[in-house]
Image (cartoon, rainbow, N blue to C red; front, side):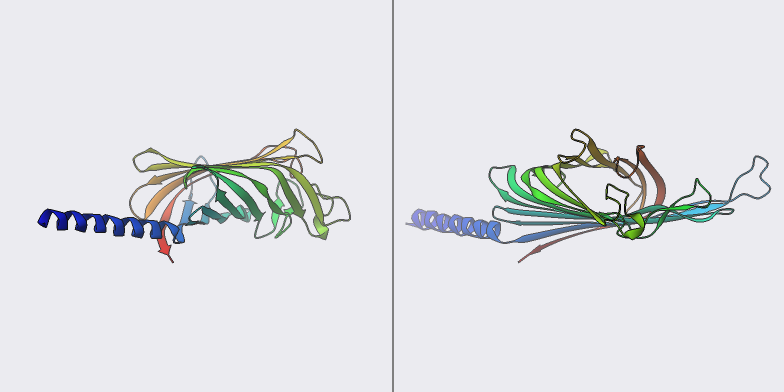
Length: 286
């Protein structure tokens, strides 16, 4: 009789655990990850025989990841924001980084790793940018000029939050500019918007190169069906994070953009710095 009672108790316990696990899987869960970083660089010269120019620079970066899961629903949103300035003793203040980008992908699971998806993206900069290679300096961008709004259906392959790829074969893109930049960035003269329809592929891969060194890769490819078919706009960024301790980290960024509407040349940006970095994680279940 005792064995029967024990066996019955085990069955009841397993049944309760299974129900609780199933209930937990059905509950919506938010997982929020954020990174705040400030990089500072400085150089100073006094009676230096070989010459030199006093400089200092600062870069502020704020990145957020919002991941929502419930049953067969997956919703990933990533915010990438950065702004940097440098000061050269003879040339004054100049912008070194200026970026605001919001990516969001909503997916409905169809197999273990595949989802029907809908992509949304918004990209612009905060302040006016200049070309200092000519005199007088020339304005080349401004807040919301250009701004890009991209959206469209597709399929998402997601192995994890650190490895995923979205394919959207019918993606709409709107390019917005103010009156001053009308006629640039692919927008016709006298207009403030341009529409394109094309193929969009975006991918994300983050992994550890070795202990305390993490590498993050973000890529977006876009080809417009309505103009320059076969010409692929490319936006590829690599971030390498070196952990010194809990708060101090070094960062290297390599950013390449190929976009004939913005520039006939390959755009490249490189950043290296040592600074304060704060990471936080939060998991919320409703």
